[in-house]
Length: 148
Image: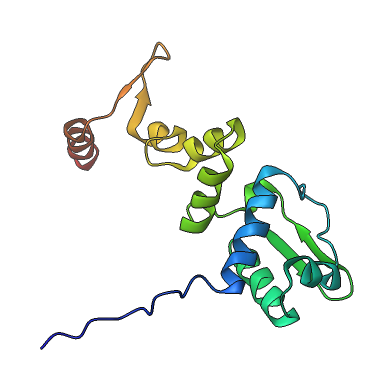
């Protein structure tokens, strides 16, 4: 006998997920610019027609993804783009929904396995300054040379 998970028809996403997604996309497209505070809780709860608890959970989720930062008595503001967790599945999805721009593609190349950082490790400079691939065989030969 196999146990299958049955999802009742008509059940959609939770309010918290929808609020998180909407604010996340709004941040990505620049509706809430970096370093600028979000509207107060009362305004956001009425805007989304949700409870304060739902809004706070959304803010916690977005903070964990690096998009927001909060401080008691000060408020909640959008963090700089360099702090965003670009490899988070939700953040990637929101970028795809919002449309990829130059800022996203240059940042993702910098941190991707085939991007600039990885290329720097996978290549070495020759005496005349040109780069060429540093193959596994070359690494092995260099290691043998260093060991004697």
